[in-house]
Image (tube, rainbow, N blue to C red):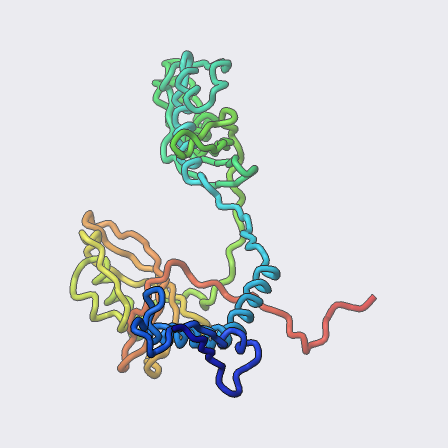
Length: 371
């Protein structure tokens, strides 16, 4: 015999859960012989009820958290701005363009009658050129790139310097003329000078993602690059190096070891400085001739070493004797550091240090008259 059992929610249960947690079962009368209905016992139904009740409580607790999380995601999506990547010039192909232009100028200087095809490998329009003279009558020596300028996103203007060497033998008539004239000829002056050739090179992508190059014209001979005014440096005037100056002693010991390979170089270096002597050693001895010291305007040599940690920068000129007993002038920019009563080499600088630009003091009145 079956009877209806109703399970009520506990006292204090929220109304929204009462409908979920209230359950009504039809179960067999315990007095009956079969205490199962559709394969479920009353104990199994009780366990199922407990699981459902705890699941409902879990939903009630986490629902506010889920709602806040969803709202936050929606807000982030609505207000997020797309990332903008700035486009900046990269100078792609500059080194390749420089090398391409150097090869083109070298071939151009050697070219003569009938060499249009050789130049066409660099400049397709070379087939229309009129070339004169014997091929190979001259060639370029000491080719080097002295200027590299980007004129368009994919075009580089490359200036190549070259000393032109003539391979042609002078005729007897020319030799007699040169011998009768003691003045240097214009041809001789030109032959002894450096020439500058400007080449426009286009850069592009070829198959497989590689970079390709092409000249847009034959080279144009141009004037030498302008010379600028030397910037102001942090050093004082050039002075004779004194043997009693501790700085002279430190620099002489260091450069002797560095250039001749004598002694241990590390003993002349400040802690943390890493340098290696030139190998094989190109010189046999070194003499320090002159010195420029940072901010030093005194004409008297320095005879003492300041406190530990004091640093100073120098430019020294030396004479290094090579293996042929020829003395060669060299110059070095160095940073020295004081430690334990002696100077040590803290750095072999890449270039002399420039002085900081002088800025006007805003607290001082301007000397410019008012209008």
